[in-house]
Length: 185
Image (cartoon, rainbow, N blue to C red; front, side, top):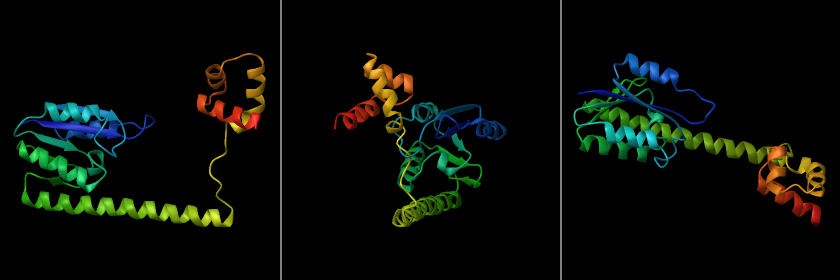
């Protein structure tokens, strides 16, 4: 009956040390941590290792629901798989324990509201972008490679390869090719 922790952040710039500390304080004897998007389970190697490690009667501990899954469906599937192995889920911030009937019900409600909130946020963002485009305010991000057109031309003339140009200017090889297309047309 071990407590096994799982910590996740989405980007390399973020840190999971605070989550790990909270999981240790909760009594976790083993913690799996990774820097990876939570949109799907694919590519989440530490989550896979965690799920392989955890045993019957253990408890998987996370700090927040969104550390484990971003959609209600993924969350329900994970919780179902855990239940089939007689493993409960403990969510520290929301004080949810799926080892109890109340915890299971509360988890289901929170998952649905979290997904709804994400959908509403996305909808608002798209509406805001559309309005900004109508006003001529939103034009997307600046084309960084196009701003380096003269440098790309000079480096091409000097005989550098396209990958070498990309590396030197800090842009992608595809961007170099796109600029070359605009130069030639």
